[in-house]
Image (cartoon, rainbow over all chains, first blue to last red; front, side, top):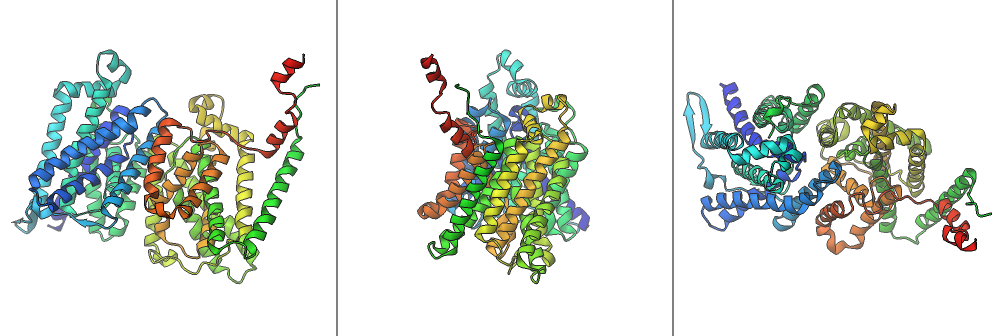
Length: 292
Length: 334
């Protein structure tokens, strides 16, 4: 029973990681950029919800504002910081991404202070829980799993069936050839960032409902873990990111359950190092067709 | 008649040695007496430590062309090794203890550099960045958890304060000289060739594995020494001082100064260390300004402010000696 309980916890955490990992994976698949700022977009999303609800406006508006805010922020970052560097060496692009991440973290600290703020989780998802046998499942867990699965299905349909998704796959396969075929590169890249940010915003709300506090560094470690998940699953692969996210979530819960909670973050990195040593392409990285 | 006059290598060496001695004498006189305030003396030591850190990160970033994000991890390894060694050898003659501690700190950090370098070799660019970030975090988490040895979060206290001006300055001079000589040897050129084009270097017979690990180990070695000096400067160590922010701080210095320019790293480390103290009103905005600077420099001058320019005093004297026969004048004389 304890095992099953932990399994559910792990799945909940894992599906949040998966949502965020998808954003990393898609952006990396297209412009080969490790978007360090992705994690910090989550943090900004958390603050948006928190501030709007604190202002007395309904949670539904807050959620909508969070998603729109994250998308706009991601697109602005892409236009201002990444577009001018598209043909620059990879290292410059990576340093810029770190710069953007740092900028968001420090601006958040200036605006809202370094101390963690309580996130009004119960205003979004009521704190009810259900008893099934000896299992306790909270509403948050159920909502997280349902929303995450729904988001992933929508994403799959978008990438596999829509015209935009087809163009995204084409760009990730061969940027030059895609451009020759009349695909508007800038639009596709911006669209990818927007989709990633939308998933990140959903992930942000779900994450903050599970751990109801927000601070300027919330996004940093969460982002790194989601990136590890993306690498574990095979970067550029959508099913890989989902699988990797769930694996990381389960591993983390397992380490906590064994009583080594202070080592959790270290274990995540050890997993990353082992994966990169044994199979640098990750679980699903080898199949190029899966790339987005 | 008009051939370019050159200074012989031995004379060049002598000029630099004289310069170093002048620096030591002036520095010792300044910091020894009461002419400088406590704060400025501390600032000078801090600048020295950051110069070593920036120059050592520059080996991996500027010369090898990789982007390690865990430099503070190596610094932490060096700091804790030296601090523990110094605390255990209090009854040893101080100079012996200092030198041994510095060497041990450097070597242990270098071992960590090799341990990280070998797996990192299979990876490129972003993966390497993230794996070094991971190692840096692992080191910090290990320091927090192994509190029996390292003191954990409450910190390692009462480290003997061995970092005098002389010690720090000698380390700075030795580090810069060592890196200069290595980078101008065939080993250094091999490392540079990897930065320029890995495949071409490989096909010219450069042993990629060996030179990448060498560059990593060197970078870690000097970071370890800087860590030791930091331990001897602060007198107490806390895991929080070696987090990701600290690594980024050093990276900002290297990137702004110019990736691949020693002078750039030295100037950037000096300016960025001194600036927060001078502009205390801006202290809260410091990190915001750094991050904006980072983005702007990357967009407009990706090689950093000084690019790959490097300074040498003998070179300057050479130019002065040859000021009369500039190519333009030569033509005019004929």
